[in-house]
Amino acid sequence: MSTKGENSVEQPALYPTIFVIFGITGDLANRKLLPALLSLYSKKLLPKRFSVVGFSRRSFSREEFRDFIRSKINIRQGQFREEDVKHFIDHVTYVQGFFDQQESYKTLATKLLEIDKSWGQCSNKLFHLSVPPELYEGILHQVHDTKLALPCSDETGWTRILIEKPFGNDTKTAQSLDALLGKLFNEKQIFRIDHYLAKEALQNILAFRFANSMFEPLWSSKHIDRVHIKLFESIGMHGRGKFYDSLGAIRDVAQNHMLMMLALIAMDKPETFSASDVRTARGNILKRLVSISKREISQKIVKGQYHGYIAEEGVAANSKTETYVRIEANLGISRWKGVPFYIETGKAMAETKTEIDIYFKNTSDKGSEHDPIKQNILTFRIQPDEGIKVRFFVKTPGHGLLTEPKILKFRYSDVPSFGVMPDDYERLINDVFIGDQTLFASTDEIMASWKFITPILDNWKDLPLKKYNRGVNGLD
View (tube, rainbow, N blue to C red):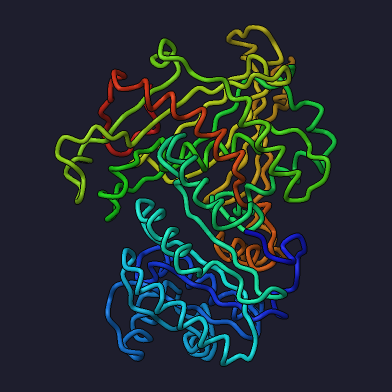
């Protein structure tokens, strides 16, 4: 289905818009979506006429729902003016319904029509699925059958859909979900959320590479020895046990966040920095990931589970779900021939951090006690304490030519003019309003990442699940 105006990027303030959140009473809506919308509202970046319509099964009166939103919305004390909070909540309304009952969607359609009539014009519609992935297909079928996704006019009123990761559980389910979405929307209307792509420090990788001529000439196997991408969390499940146990580390973050970081590091410079060219450049890298055969699994992959995981709420007592995984990935491209890309993620680790280390080749073939091996390291710190650092060598004062490592560091927090970096979801929602898909995954990227991950899932049943204690820095 196509709507007019999808190729253009318009100023959101000109167009009344309704933001529909399926599952508004859930954790994601309260922790991420509503605070992001409130922030955009306080900055006057939302349309003058906008409405947030929540859809969930709980029963609320109007005042009960307002009180619920105020009590649950995750905002820091003093973050927003009380007047802005009050007026924002005035724009939020609620429809009680059940995800598997068509009558509930008809009620929702009636509510949207009422809002349009009160505004005296057709509005844009955004649908966000803030629900567990197993509910996606049922909701999408209902949206289709009740014609909620149809624009209300031939001339105005686009519709767009936001889908959270994980997008499927393997190649087959991803293809099925994508085919269903294709019946509802065209590619320009589908926004697949990988919120890591919206992190300012991650976006800075492209600026750092392509705006500084001193680094891009070194960006190949001729100078780079290996790349290590780490996403560690010190926490365990924190109430996500049932959800996480159905995914594991590889589906939760490796297939999406971590492969996207790999793509940003390895991609060629796009022809332009338009959404289409950037997504094509990322996709070209993901398509060239070399499949790991069943024979190679034990050499290239380590999986683990922290002690105490099966005691977490919602986790099966005999669960074999991995909470840690390290994968050695390779690219079938001459530029990166022989360069391993290690992606490593784990729960209950020593610290919470996301960073990417680029190891440059040694300046000498071998080292000794007086002339240690020298290896420059470029680190992109994605979170926390966002920034960039370079490990380099200088001469040690005194006789002889001995060197020692030093660190050159840049941190966003050291630059007052940068202010507070926008939240991931704030940036993503703003981009959806204006129709910019740069920070959202394309069909090609999703399918290429699953093409690499699915054979691992199919073949690693016999790979030992290593147990580890909380607070480790990684597994051997």
